[in-house]
Every structure is written in C-alpha cells, then in structure tokens.
Image 1 (tube, helix red, strand yellow):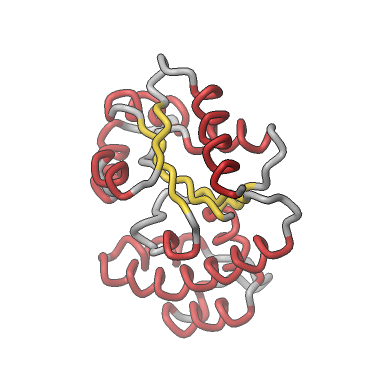
Image 2 (spheres, one colour; image 1 turned 30 degrees about the vertical axis):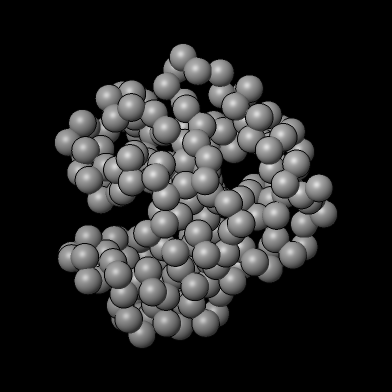
Length: 195
C-alpha cells in the first residue's frame, strides 16, 4: 500500500515522516529525490538542457542552481514546463522504489502531492495540518527567513482547507494534539484495510 503525505510549508510533514520512519516504514522524499534525479537521470538532464540551455549544468555535471532558479522564478509558465519534465521522472522513480521495498506500507512525502498529480500513484493521502500562523512561525525559525518570503511561498501552495478536503486522512500538528498517537491510529486504520 502506497500512502502520500502532504501539507503546506511548516505543517510538519518531515516531523510526521520521522515518526513513521522510526516505526520501521520506508519514506520516499520527493524533494530530495527530484534534486538527485536532476543530477543523475540522463534523460531528464538532456530534457532540462533542451528546455533551459546547456548552461543549466556546470562542467562537472552538477546543477547550475542560479541558472535553473532564474528560469523557474521568471514566470509560472517556465515553472510549469520544468515540472512537466521533473514530475514524471519522480513518479517513475517512486514506483520503482516502492516495488523494491519489503514493507507492506510505504510512504511518499510531497509538499505538492495534488498539484503534481502524485496522488494518482498512491492508494491514500494524508494531510498534515497546522494553522497558518504556526506554520509561518516554524518556517521563519527553521529557514531563518522573512515573513514575506514565507507568505509568498504559502500563496503558491493549496490552502490547508483544500489539502484537507482532498485527503483521505488528516494529522493535526498544532503543538497541542498528540502527533505520535495520531500516527499510530493512522497505521492501525491502514493495516486493518490490508486485512
């Protein structure tokens, strides 16, 4: 069974995934793998060079972050074009990875699960919820950045309500609710479904 975990910036996806991982379940981190694939997947590298230009990669084969970031943030159409290359590569990589796991349940962590249509390769989705003001505070502390930058990133993501309404399950991570208990409850529900 493949489970997608999503939530807005600062909601605590990574925190929840650490708990799940500590219980012995494998986690696929879309963000990390996307970056790795952009440096290792020959077909993807070739497509990115065609889209942006050969200067999108340094001579040593590493990503030229400045050039790629400049292209991505120039406009939404550019970001969409890039996503059309990267998302299918990540999706295929996830399915390959999932088929190699021994666990009865595997998890995918993705901030843009619905926006990238990764929800069509998982059996269930879980939204991690935290109120916007808590998410803002956490992210400013974590990334040592400004309120304006975080708010701008938040506006580019689905709202908490949209994510929650699209998801099959929800875990509340507001600093009060017991997250560990909620994770155990979720795993119990998922296992019962397997029987």
